[in-house]
Amino acid sequence: MEKLFRSFADFLLSSSNVDCLPVNLAKIRRKHNFKKHFAQDINQRGFLLGNNIFIKGEDSRVVQRFTEAHEMMEALYLALKVERPRRFSDDEWTNFLKSKEGLCNSGAAELLMPTHFFLPIVEANGIGLATGSELASLCKTSLTATIRQMVYSDVSSCVFGYLQEGYRKSEQALIDAGKGSNLKPKLRVFRGWRSPHTEEFLCTNESFAENTSFYETLRANISGDIKYSRDKLDLKKFRGVFDTESMLVMINDIRTVLAFIHLN
Image (cartoon, rainbow, N blue to C red; front, side, top):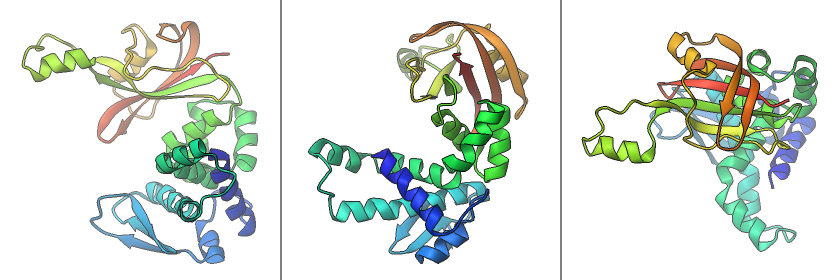
């Protein structure tokens, strides 16, 4: 199903003669009769009404670009929802109806970071935070969205995660009951991704040992600096010594460590 949305992104690019980075969304709007409007004080990033794309005016330009691409993908979703393609099995159709945001995000990523432009750069420079930063600047996309697209490229085996300080559910319950004043938060997996052919993955809310470089990045408290290291990890789904990269960023006003673990 995801391939269908990525193929739609390719169609929008080729039919609009977009042949360089950053992707010129205005050319796609003109070719396919989309109209863009900025809306104030809405409680979502954006929405699609007919061929009109409404985008939250207060958001940054980078976020607005991704929202615009996302809403273009929603045009495909709505068209498919109106008339179910015959080739969709019942299970595929059920999954499709439940997965709108993920499918539209995947298509938006392909639209803004087309594989045929993106992949040669990743292959030449390697997967990592430095390459991700360069590509984010080139594509005018957020660093986190760019890294996820880079991991998806499957150039090398790796896992990537957002790490944030937090508690286990049982600990949080104690704190909520006023009984956990002696508990300390640990650096835990908030979200994780892996390259497509990689079996290893990060389990949500699992914690990292305090002697890892990820804690050093958190304690240094310097946003945007990349730390390269080699860490001994003992995680739920894999263990060993790995080359790692980390960077501190703010996500929704929460200190977040971007963690790259290279598996080969």
